[in-house]
Image (cartoon, rainbow, N blue to C red; front, side, top):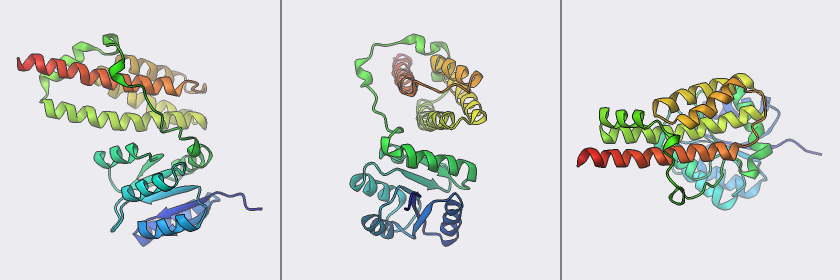
Length: 256
């Protein structure tokens, strides 16, 4: 009886398509392949698929359009988007539309293996797609931030530049935190430690002290199972919200 998961790989570049298909096959999965989004859509309507891995830059129907189709027709089917370069706008839109994960070329086999396994086993639970409370309903928590750092950034940088940096941080922090959860789940302590260290440093630079403290704790003790990922995600969400909130206040004060 067939028990292997079936993965649909989509890429308009023949070499990239063949390479990724071979890598997935080596990981002992069944593979279906499509050279564009139109073919992928037809395959999804005809075959039972457990995961879609699709390139972003494709003609006629790009990876984001295919993602929207997949989430509309098969909302619990996990979807991994592959990009040739880091594109904040594309990542933000893919995240908002329910992508399970993102790969930037070249795709490394170890991460491919771990992410596919997690997507196949847990993707239907939508662990990467949690809903947060409305921030407007929360009371300000200035202790969450180092207001001195926030003020210095607001004075030193142009408003548009700083807000763009915060936006990029928000997107990448969500991705990094999700990776911490996934590597923690498969007990890859080195990756947990490395990502937590990197994200904590960036958070400190933006004055997000409470979030940085939690990340430093994870960095120091990467081996226990993280039992409260939702609370950490909410801390990230609140930190970003109040960072934007206080930046707006500071910019208004400076303008007046």
